[in-house]
Amino acid sequence: MATQENCLFCSIIQGKIPANKVYEDEVCLAFYDIDPQAPTHFLVIPKTHIPSCAGVNPDNEGVVGHIFSVIARVAEGLGLHDFRVVSNCGVQAGQSVPHLHFHVLSGRDMTWPPG
Ligand code: AMP
Image (cartoon, rainbow, N blue to C red; front, side):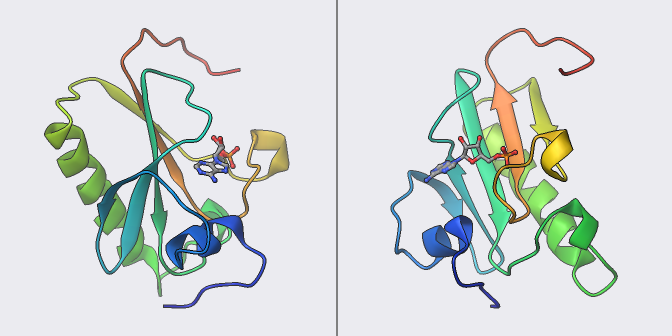
């Protein structure tokens, strides 16, 4: 598991910063967003440091498939039927934490396109 110094989400993975965890295994961690944008809003992150979607490659792409499998199972476990999965890639797209993460939002009507 490759973590990076001074990365907020690596610090959560290492237990240095607390998080309200929803799910954890050897590959990924899911925890509730500290600033929820929907009645249910959690994040799923890989335990290995990948900066963003742009850092997904043939060597680590299995992590992303695993995360989507986890999203489906966690959503089912929480009774979520309709939900949105978002990953902001780059500052202009709204990424504020440079560690790959997938937002899972549910529990309210949503509009398209996102702002
Ligand atoms: P993004 O802006 O797409 O990079 O998403 C980063 C998300 O991380 C935001 O929705 C923040 O509210 C969330 N966040 C930042 N710090 C924490 C934290 N300590 N625990 C949980 N969520 C956090």
